[in-house]
Amino acid sequence: MHYLICYDIADDSRRDDVATLLSGYGPRVQLSVFECEAGSKAVMAELRSKLGALIDPAEDQIRMYPLGDRSARGLLVIGARTIEERQDFWIIT
Image 1 (cartoon, rainbow, N blue to C red):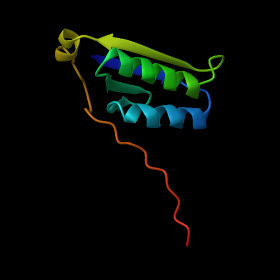
Image 2: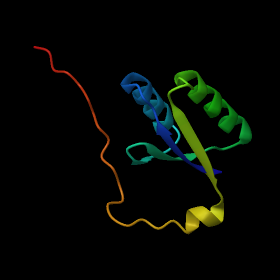
Image 3: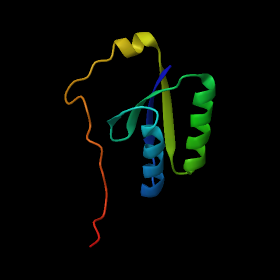
Image 4: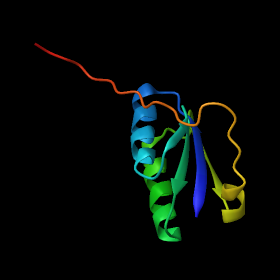
């Protein structure tokens, strides 16, 4: 089953943690949106649990929209098809 997962996270650190977790389940298609693949209900339940542990429910929100096979086949993208992942790093000499 495919899911469209989008989020609004108030804290930069929590936002990075959520993005890192979701990147293991599928590609980032917008800055706060991932298309994720869940192989089973158990995998999806585990993902929901992990996400719930990362956020502050008083300040943050995550939305998960299930996409059936028919929905995924009918996907229409207007504009750039990929988003460049931001790679932050420090060079210390």
